[in-house]
Image (cartoon, rainbow, N blue to C red; front, side, top):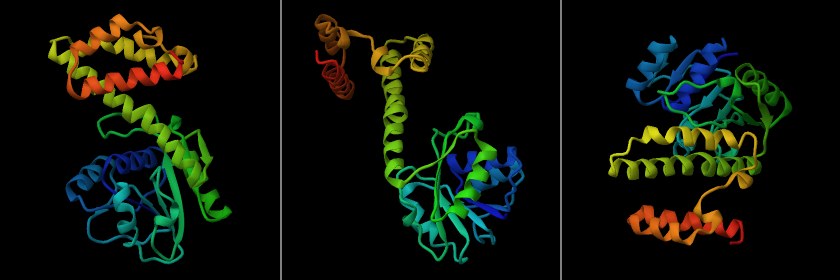
Length: 249
């Protein structure tokens, strides 16, 4: 099977890398950013182009959600298989006379961070059983955790991921702002962060909750509010209200 990866960002880089590591042949990586494509091509020894899209049996579109529809129009080949990697878009967003599908990896991707691809869940949606077999076979070479998912279910998977990853990382960034403002090395907090994440491998998140809000410690809550300002203060109040509401405090 001839496969082309479209994109040059974090997802495209890691999908390409995962395919190369698992000996899934690629004929090309294609995109607009020639500089980034060149870096990927040099590292992984895959041909690239920002001008001509090679003929393929399968195109995997790894671009931002607001570019998927536009990019999909570049694929003129009929009856090939095209998949996007978005967690929130339906496969019908793809525009062309080809078979439409989604190939969603549930993970946060950064080019500078190595990943254990075998542990990444992949969610597949296709128009027919034959295409499902094709994508399952490919994904199963990369990951030990491949599942079928409708768009309706995938929307909630992506929403959950935003809460569990993007929001949490933003809180890490806000926490670092506070520690930096007091010249407290953020490294001090890494064991706490590691234990917090590790704990929910063994305990339900709701049962693992600790801190002044769940204890309804008004003295500490008021003290913290006095130390904060602007967005961090608003976040602190919203988060504590949410915790107290969950535990009916």
